[in-house]
Image (cartoon, rainbow, N blue to C red):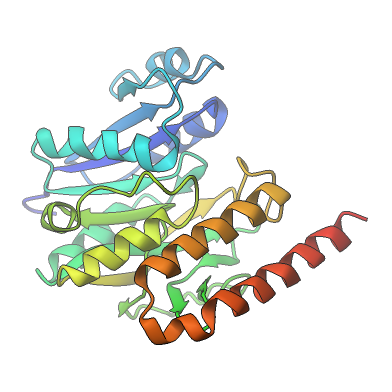
Amino acid sequence: MAGDPLTYIIIVNWNGKQDTLECLASLRAATHPNARILVVDNGSQDGSPEAIRSAHPGVEILETGRNLRFAGGNNLGLRRALARGAEQVMLLNNDTTVAPDFLDLMTRCLRSSTAIGVVAPTILYYDRPDLIWYGGGEISFWTGTMRHVGIRQREDATDTTVRDTAYASGCCLLARREAVEAAGMLDETFFIYTEDADWCMRVRRAGFRIVYEPRARIWHKVSVSAGGHLSAFKLRHKFLSNMRFFARHAAWYHWFTFPWLNVVVNGVAAVRYMISRH
């Protein structure tokens, strides 16, 4: 692509050496020539920095010395990328692999209109590569819930329609510099989960669109760090983060319904989890 914008791909790693090495190996085939990779290592104790330097000497590593979690690690990377003159930045989970053309497709989409601030790709299950994990996002302020569109449905290869979406998953998103500067950094008061949706709300309120590009594809090892697709850790922290998100962004009239319906929805999920454990 002519005039490829300088792009920083930010990957946060915390004791995920093998996943990160596999992710970086897949990025080698990416066809965007003006991309630089920045791994933010959150104080790993598994030899990740040394292994990454050995296998991928061209990758920059920023060692934090401690676990800054998702938001803190990505914020450090975002500040470094912006200081280096990045025109667009990508957040990418370390437990993903990517299609070679994913970044070119997302870049073309982002650059097609100055109104677009963030682009999200199709995210598929790593162990079921034909099934969708994220095909866009929806938020209901009445029920206090958010969901991935198309989750666990088979991918439709004929779907080429770029469309607006409520939020992009922090698993993979591409943002233009102006959107990051307008929205600010990720909110580090979220312990884990929902930082991405909160940030996307601020991007939209700054006047930018968030769109889904179905032709760009990556594969995600879902919730490896949280103990699987459903776990007590995930259920608890998603509930707490969701309540924080909706308390911050809901209108006054949504308060009549979302606190109670959020409890019901999460209660059903908890029951399903307990049944699955037996």
